[in-house]
Length: 405
Ligand code: TTP
Ligand code: MG
Ligand code: MG
Image 1 (cartoon, rainbow, N blue to C red):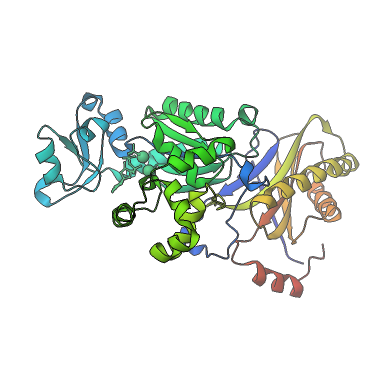
Image 2: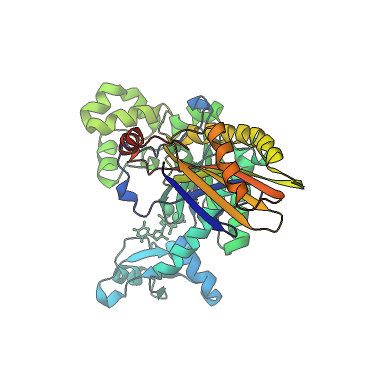
């Protein structure tokens, strides 16, 4: 029997609504292989999904203008110095009017805009702002796929915020970002990632665009091929030579033609030309634990009353586990019970286990209760999960050491 016992004052548990969930970003994204359970998507029919793509406006430059408001209204570029052969990492919209853009050599940027003001890259600052923006996304959904510091896809198909309106959720997120960080974001709202990304660029800066399922066909028909993410300069030139200007043209050329000219990318282009993109929003976080806890209006006087409450909390734990499993594959490694006594002394107890088990929780609760033998104000039931690339190792281990508590 493997059993770990610890007593603490609170633990690492978020108890804002009587529900505990800890979601932790992986230390190193590259440790997650393609077979790891990172993929997440809503249950909805693929055409009915509500995907939001958020992208900050001139991100690095916007942060610099916020830090130094005297830069506002003037053309600025963030990046390396012109004499050290640096390039423009980001520039504000004022600088863009002169033809300055990202990845342009700074010396060239100065030729285009002699009054350009430059600032060095302050990556730590942009990272800290990005972190806050991502925490705002998490207020609305846990199905988030970050693409870069300033950009992410969100699947809000099952979100109950704003009466389930993705349009209002996007507005709210942009508003929250502005209130919190004093910089603006743009958003695209559509039934898939391809269209959501196109749409977020449509009304930039500080705007958003919705493409409803009913609008997809007509929108895509007229969409310039250059707007497709993945169509770079070389592909765009080839397409122009072939007379392919809009996605409607791509569709007309057909699957075989697209494959002939663009190889495997042609397959994707054909789907895009019909407005189809079934890729799920893939989260980059891994759930480490899931718990449900209840704080009682009146303290539970004895062990018997605690054991009765476990039935209810256990049901809620199963519900939450079911919902969490729709987003990620989860491999439990231990069962946890937390008790808080009337004097706020808190104790947790856990045992190895791969599935929730009501009787095991009751046995853990009994053991934990013996430590205080006092009225109880809070009970929590939880599960801890293995990292996604370890499930098999764990099941071998479990066979050798079955939980016997
Ligand atoms: P983008 O979102 O591509 O650009 P942006 O946020 O500056 O402007 P927009 O309003 O058009 O979205 O990139 C986000 C940040 O990534 C950008 O602020 C700086 C950095 N970046 C580079 O460092 N090099 C590059 O070549 C690009 C394109 C971006
Ligand atoms: Mg941006
Ligand atoms: Mg971006």
